[in-house]
Image (cartoon, rainbow, N blue to C red; front, top):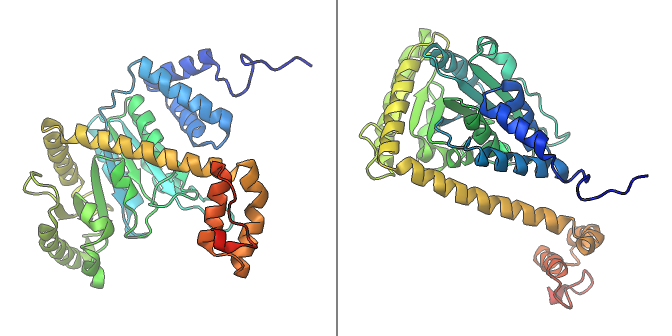
Length: 356
């Protein structure tokens, strides 16, 4: 058997292959983009090495100058996010725009699996040659997005897409992470809502640049208009970015089913994005987002390294049992684990919790 060398190691990316993939992505090839996102989402260490090499290759080729408008979209299940994306995306491709949709699907807490059915709900857009739809599982990541959503957004920009739309899982007020990786954040709501305004001061609402009330058609139209008016009044109390245009945050009503109002949504997105580009706000925001992404990646990497540390792995199960039995406090067990990981002497043990 041939000896494995550094040059033939599976952890060492094939530079020719990576350069070829980067060239195809920069040329806008959809299959190459899909392959790259799959690579980025993989948890295998060799795939992670290839992903990092791919980003280096794209950077060297000056293909990461990403001018795409990044739009985040959140809303509760059933509010019509897929219908809105179908109508909105179709309107944009009709203008000659290339649109990428990154749809994050919830993963089962029991099996870890995801249905990934968003693409089937966007039947027309999925067949549009100027559109790219990529469903991804959320995995264990909280905040409505997948762990590698930011990398997928960057890859879509490198592939020359004009608009990258990120649809979150859609589970409530905690979905704020998407606002940390996009330029404009839309919150989709249904008519009515009853007590919805009670949460207007917290969470996802105060991050929204636009509140879009969907289903403003048929019998629901009067209710949609009342909801829009209620939120328009509430949002005036939530202005949080000094210097933003006067109409931001905005509230509007649309009918995604009839594709009514999507043009106004796009016009307002353009006005806001143009203003933020001209004032330098968007560049500053993206730099801040990059720093936060760096910090989050270090935290996740440190946690992974801790869990796989030989001494930690050897005692993890015993400590879990000790915590469950009450023979050591959670804090003491954590101190013991960190001491093992950092190489400190005399860490606390399950039988001697006071040392923690």
